[in-house]
Image 1 (spheres, helix red, strand yellow):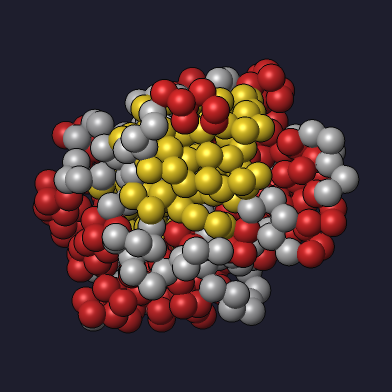
Image 2 (image 1 turned 180 degrees about the vertical axis):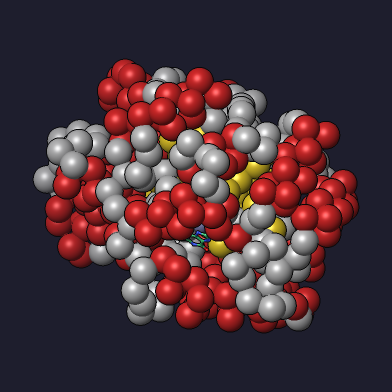
Length: 435
Ligand code: GUN
Ligand code: ZN
């Protein structure tokens, strides 16, 4: 039994509905962890007295939070992050596709999968929902690496049967067969979940989308992830490729790829019909702010959070950071440009429970409460001189937290707990030395 002491931040509701009243803050709190789960949360003095036998981890005035949940990433793009470029389609052709080609080598896939998960954990992220490449071994690589680290990870084979280079295309039939085999192999093993993954409508024929829609009907408890309305030229291309469709979302809907459990990345340029259908269907959208600014895609409308489940994500490597702190900062800046000032309680919630809800995993991860899995990030709120001097003036938790949101990076991540174990000790020797 482990007892973590520090400031504790958790949520009892949705801050987009309730404001900061949705958050619960303990200045000198404690989280009791046993057998991989959070068993109690309360005042430090109280829990210490009640559990004298527990191992104590006193994090002082650092903040104990749920580990971050990154709801949309491409782990195969780890090594091409921050590549200078132009628009989405150029960027895909110039950097992404050549790099994804390298994943035909399973050893390379294993190397990048391990490196990627170590990078995200060092940034306080304990769950990711990732794309892979068309190669089945790229799925084995990320799930094996996640299993070795005890992480709850979502991933699936990226399917593309057109408008991608030779060597990076499957077919409708092979996408179905490979996805099904990988799903049966991995879904529900340890903390792993398979996600049916057509990359996006421009790289899938209607036949491939239909085959994956059929697969989803066979395994309805899986998630399905894809991209939606990221750039205006992409949308024009979809219109050419799918002349019968009412809009971009309809290209998915027509093939059985819209319902609860659908997770659409970006979703910037939505029509009113698309917004209404997303809400009605119970689907989720994922805001990828560092990517949307880096690739020049557009400004996500956070007003959507009142209608549909919204998650937050790095979109590595279209996004320019592995850090969900940096991602929160970018979400704040993007919202500012739309006149939507996001409260720190909302930003932090998006990076934890909001993303967990988008992945329909909010009953297990993304919050600190009895019964939840013990995936935790311990955040130093004075990790650099610049942050420390700004936080020193704070009178509330939110004022203390905001400089870390805006300026923090992996130096702010003091410790990470995954499934009730301290990352960097038993499972990951070498990583995350005690700070
Ligand atoms: N749309 C289709 N594929 C991708 C991708 O890899 N990254 C981004 N940002 N958008 C995409
Ligand atoms: Zn993406």
